[in-house]
Amino acid sequence: MQTIELRDGRTVLVDDTAAADADRPTLVWHHESPHTGVLFEPLRSLAADRGLRLLAFTRPGYGAADPLPGRSVADGARDLAQVLDALGIARVAVFGGSGGGPHALAAAALLPDRVAAVTTVASPAPFVDTPAWWDGMADDGGLRAAIAGREARLTWAATADFDPSQFVDTDWAALDGDWAALGRDATAAGGSGLQGGADDDVAFVTDWGFPLSAVTVPTVVVHGTRDRVVPVAHGRALAEAVPHATYEERPHDGHIAVLSTVPSLMDRLAATLRG
Image (cartoon, rainbow, N blue to C red; front, side, top):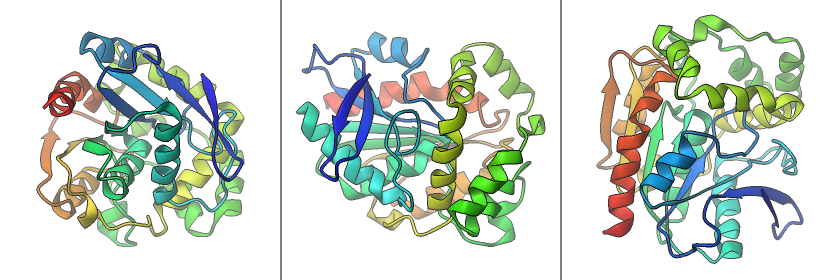
């Protein structure tokens, strides 16, 4: 992990699979909530098999990355621009899973000269306090607390327990198989996951700082119909709001199982970067 200092004095951590081979096409992975910032398997090997340089940076408040209370989703794009400048990278594709999805979309909207394409899986849509936004969430306590602000969200997190009903059978199979490292990473986030998670949720239920109509690069949105963490209505809303987005709905997948699409989605992003 590399530490990069941003212009405002904050530091972020960057995990980079091919810093010594800077000529490779670069894919930026935007992590789920919570995360440590480490690129785990199978992400690393999937990228390597496709000749991609894969990097990720830790969002404020997670791991050893300095917090930024009150941050917006758009702030992530501004941080990414500085990370790319520091690494001398001109052009990337971006990929966001779950809580990383909004941040990947922000990069595509606000850095169109640097982002060639964007893909999201199981991503939330911009907040609208309607039944359609909430319906189907097995545990909406964190997001509802976030509406009241950061302190309320932190207070909620201090006593909240994980609800296993959020995951369907195919999710548990994925966590026991190819995506076991994702579960370990979320657990390893520990205390920083509470702070970073609170800031993520507050950002999700406030103005993202950009309209989805500003995402004009090639976009793929994938969602599982059985998702009980971020219900499928969110994927449909994203696909409808992003101009010319390609939408894929997976009828048997929940929130984790939908990651089975990552290899084919990486293929598409690699082809765009090399096009």
